[in-house]
Each structure stands twice: as structure tokens, then as C-alpha cells.
Length: 109
Image 1 (cartoon, rainbow, N blue to C red):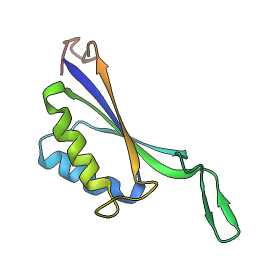
Image 2 (image 1 turned 120 degrees about the vertical axis):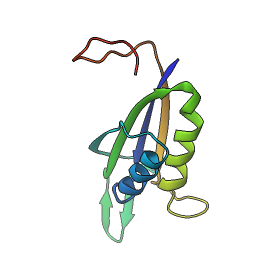
Image 3 (image 1 turned 30 degrees about the horizontal axis):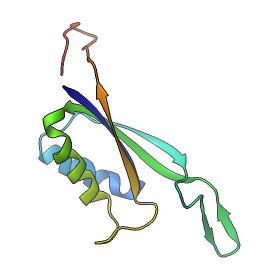
């Protein structure tokens, strides 16, 4: 079984997350710049209110057996302190029924 793991993280944490994932053998990752807000609904800094904050969306498809390892790497690397802070991000895991390589038509990873 395959899973798709999506992580919304702080942009300044992306490189260390990707480096640690690669170190563990998970090199196939897609990343996108995104903007959004979580439960805190934006942030006030002085008189300025930031409704949507810049984030990075990382996603990868892996064997379900690797799910916990990948989630642990992302969680550990994305936290901004030992206990974490608002805005550190979110991880979503989805079941994938199948995957195909376009160039060869091969099914699977």
C-alpha cells in the first residue's frame, strides 16, 4: 500500500527537512510555495495583521511501511522549539490506490 504525505511547513525549515529525508533515503519530494493560515487565523505584529503567511507544501508518495519514519523526520525537523510553536505546520497522510510512471507506464513507485 502507498501513502501520500503532505506537509505544510515554515519556509526556513524546508532545506533541513529535505536534507534529513534524503539522508533516510526519501529523495522523491515535490515542493511548492503556498500561503495560508491555521487555527490561529493569522498573526498580529504590532498594528499590522498578517492574514495569510508564507509556507512551503512538501509532498511525497511512499510505501505505507515508511509513513511513521517520514512523519517523524518532518515533525522533528519542522519544530521551532522542543515543544513546537503555532505556525510550525501540519502533516496530512492519504491512502494512494495506485501510482504510474508516465515515461514507462509502470505501476508502483
